[in-house]
Length: 422
Image (cartoon, rainbow, N blue to C red; front, side):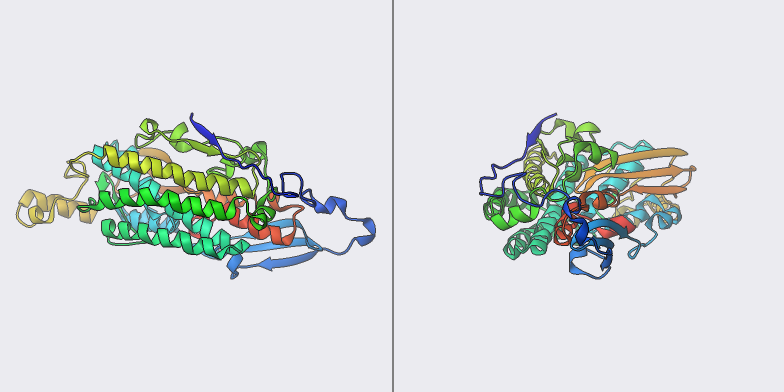
């Protein structure tokens, strides 16, 4: 596996790794004479630093974090139960709202799982377009993370720069799907639409410009004394602990574990792409920042390769029992009308059995699990939400740090509450 270790020479005096006073658990150094009763502080569920309707119940010894208990469920929508009463294609709009910062990734994950269950092989053009959709989603999500994390720590300029690029990317998504946030891009066996004429040229131009913006952001942040002071040796978690907590995505890779579903369990032909898996060395907030910044560069590499190899041809399989016939045929041909009617009224039946398909989402391993009894609706739909699992380790990462460090640690986890609560 090709990996790339992301690190900087932290030459700023007094801010080199391990050199900042107070980065070891502070509670261990407290004098017995200073012992006081612990205090409980609620952060959220309505608080700008919680990144959604998350409630953190924090136990403090002075300003030192003793324990953090996340309280979730304020955004619970019952997606998994709703899916049991809908056909596989009708579930697609629910996946948009599971992770609303990377809707197309969730669309692709559902389609991949349903197609695995049904034994459907998609077309070459559909496969490459899904890769493009997934990498665009990864960049979109990381741009939100970097911008909002900058606000949490005090770097507002970064937010403006990155959200400007995000809007340009959303313009391309809107031209493709007709929507910006909730795309409903995929269908079982294909896509809802092909990209319009000239779209690939616009994306190629954006890919040529975007790395320069990342260079400017890294020039502003990577050796900035305030940024280093708020991130270096903060919220560190070892590789062993990251594995034991079942972390994935940038969270586990920042701890030095090169686990990436695109490499370890390839799908959509990712094994044929040339890209590196960024890994960190220390597992702290700073390494998570470095990993995500490098991931955006690697996503640009993948996008350019996908654009180069994008073939002509159909985006949907030719089976009329799976894909709706064109509207003009359904209005003029009796057989096409029957296929249209049966799909709309009954859905596409799946063989009895079960299937699990994971993709590398922006936050880590995003898994969709279906159980079928042979009908057009799943008996069980289960999501493996990486944000929910990563959030569980926040108490481990926060113990012994100051309350102000908890804000940086929470931001570094990169949670999306739609995915956490489902």
